[in-house]
Structures are given as C-alpha cells and as structure tokens.
Length: 317
Image 1 (cartoon, rainbow, N blue to C red):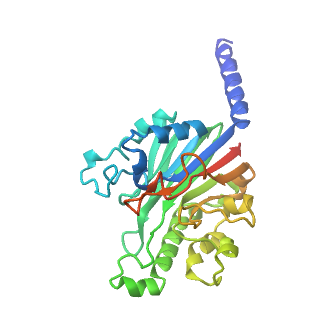
Image 2 (spheres, helix red, strand yellow):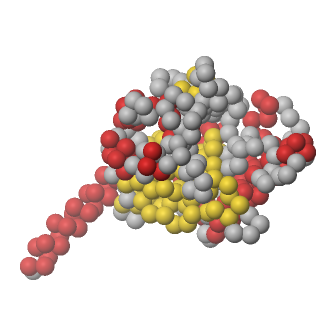
Image 3 (cartoon, rainbow, N blue to C red):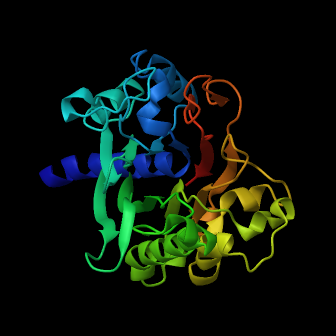
C-alpha cells in the first residue's frame, strides 16, 4: 500500500503529461542562414534571436550554421576561436528558449544544426563511404524525443552547390555535361539509403527531411518550363520515386510556385512521411519582416539577412 501511495500519483502525472503533449501544437522552423547569420553577427544576433522568439518554434533546423566571414566583409575567419558558431549554439539557442542543440551534419564549414525544446540524439552522421561517395557538406539523422513514446526522425542535409562535378578537373566541360546534377543525385541517393532507406516501414513512422538541396523539383516545372528529362530534376525525382517522402510545400500550395531563395528558385525543401503528413496543419516560406532578403550593395554574394527564406511547419501531434 505504501508503494501504491507513491506510484498512483506518478501514473496520473504521466498520463496527464501525455494527454497535454498529445494536444499540443508542434512548430518546426528550417532556414539556411547564410554563413552563420553573417548579417547579424556584429549585432550579437539580437535581431535573429528576436525573430525566432516571436515565432517560438519547438524545433529549429539551421543550414550554413557556422560563422565563416568577418562582419561586414568577405574576409574569411581563419581561426576557430574567431568563430562564434557552431561552437556556441548552446548559448545562442538558450536565448530563444531552446535547451538542446546538436550539430547534425558536418563535413566542412557548412554544417546543419538542430536546436530544440525536446531532447535530441544523433542517430547517424552521413559524410560518405570513404571511397567513391562524398557528401560534400555532410548530412545527418537525428531523433527528437517528443515524450510519451513519440519520436521524430529528422534528416538534415545541404547538397553540393556547383554546376560541375565535385573534383572535376575540367570544370567547364563537367558543367556542360551536367556533372553537378549527377553528383548531387548520387549524394541524395546515398543520404536516403543511409537514413530513411535503412529502416523498414518508415512511411508509417514520423520522419522529416529538410535542407538546402541545391536542386529544383519537377513538381515546379509549370514555372520552369524545362524538359522533364532535364538532369536538374534528378535529386527530387529520386526522392519522389524511391522514398515515402512527400513535399510539404507542393502539398499545401498545389499549383502555386513558392520561391525559397532570393534568386527566385525553390531549392529548400521540407519532406515528411505519410504518417507525419497526417499531423501537419500548414507549411509556408516566410518572406516578410526580418527574413525579407536584400542583396548586399558591396558584397554581391551576400544577402541580408540571408539569400534563402525560412520554412515554417506547424503540426499537431
């Protein structure tokens, strides 16, 4: 009876917690923040933090989550001690209310980072096989413990960006032969095989894949008007044909072209499995306010605050 005295209240607390979690909205924010939010680093990231706090997401996925350039310049930071990010993501995330941080995918200076109100763990980092497959910027598979037996699998990635193949000696000839497109497709296949493709019946589980794919989708060809056999579509055609993933923006904005970059392309995607799609309420890119992108007048390769727009996904679990 003494044991029951303590166990019953504990069971009640757990049940109430699960019921509360089950009815709670979950918000996920993805954004390629261009060179570790170069735009706001001199300001101590105050504008960036204010933007995130206003949205109050439960989980954030950041691409290009590393400081790379000195403020207001195109001078690269040479020493790790000069770089605030990614080494201080725990401090920065704490300012907008996230207790957990994880460098999910990192092979070079363009990592992806996840921050969360919920506990995180890395399942697998995907950098290549050490032989013929290279995932240039790295990718990662993380698991988020949402409580009450619910676990969300998140795959982050940032694929190779150039028109020519990685390591090509004749870059001009490689670009003309769509070397970059074929290389990205190889990256994408390997990432999928190492993550969602390695799990049986993943379509019935909660999976989300988000990142900068550096590739356009044939789902948007009503806007691009290319031949459907164009190698530019290889990355997303592979995902659409060989995985259970569903393109959220396409799903919620059918027939409407939604750019994800200042240049006018849609290359930042959020994919989910059918099991997770049932719980998604909305998916949108954010164009107004702080994320509104403007090209720097002096350094043409830089934008304020980023050359990409964030994607916001709202779910109810």
